[in-house]
Image (cartoon, rainbow, N blue to C red):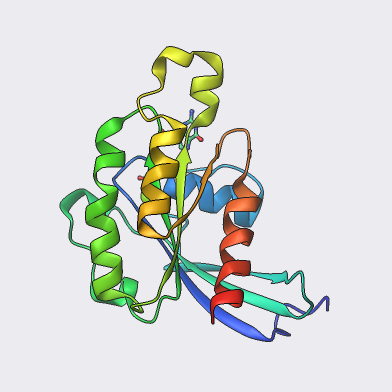
Length: 180
Ligand code: GDP
Ligand code: MG
C-alpha cells in the first residue's frame, strides 16, 4: 500500500555500537537516501520510521532508534532498548577496538531489550578498505565467526557508498518476522 500508516507489524529496532562507527550515517542513508547534513548530530528525532514490504507479503513498519551520542559515555538509557525486537550492532572495520566492544554491546542488548532480540552485526566503512586494503583491522572471516558463535546475522556495509545498507536493515526486518 502507498499509505505509510498501513502496516501489519510494528518493529522497534535500535542502533548500537561505539561512537563514530557510522550509526547515524547508516540510518540517514537508509531513511533519507542521503548522508546527514549535520554530521555530528543524530537524525534529529528519537527514532525514524520506514514501512517496508515483506517477501512473504504484508508490510512492516520499522521504528528505528538512533542514539544521541550517549554511547560515548556508555550511558544509553533503558528507554532506548525497551521493547526492541531488533538491533543493528555496528562496528568500524578500520578500528579493531570497535569490534572488540561488540561483545559488551551484545550483552547490554540481551539484558535491556527483548531477550530474544534479533541482531544484525554490521561492519561499516567498507569503502575505506576498498580504497586502501591496509586500513582493514577486522577481517571478514573473524566477524563472521563471531556472528555465528553468538547467533547474529552479519554484513559488511558502507553508509558512504550505500553498499549493503538497504540489505542490512531489511534482512534484519525479514529475520524478525521469521523468528517471531
Ligand atoms: P555514530 O557516532 O556511530 O553515529 O557515527 P556517525 O554516523 O556520526 O559517523 C561518524 C564518522 O564516520 C563521520 O565522520 C562520518 O562521516 C564517518 N562515516 C560514517 N559512515 C561511514 C562510511 O560508511 N564510510 C566512511 N568512509 N566514513 C563513514
Ligand atoms: Mg550518531
